[in-house]
Image 1 (spheres, rainbow, N blue to C red):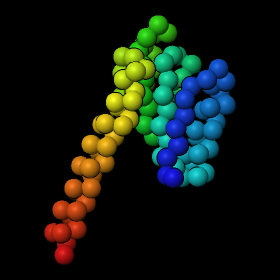
Image 2: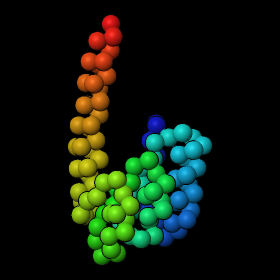
Image 3: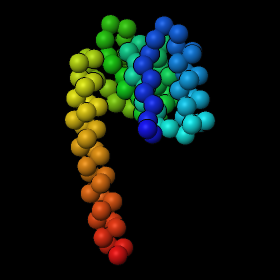
Length: 101
């Protein structure tokens, strides 16, 4: 598996260190999801950051690559839009290989 997923927790410094370690040491693509000011450093340390707006403020949203309004939208973002993105990348790679041959 080439991906690592980090969710915010009470011990945000530990999650930040784990995210940085996996990103640099294991050379995996990292995704961090956070909803408050304590998750900002974790979101910025990951390759892809998702901020969830809510009761804790907008700091995570401002620091993230993608922003969603509620946790329930996370499934659609990861599964539906992730699959669409993967299919688009596959089409580009196929057309590029066809042009090279």
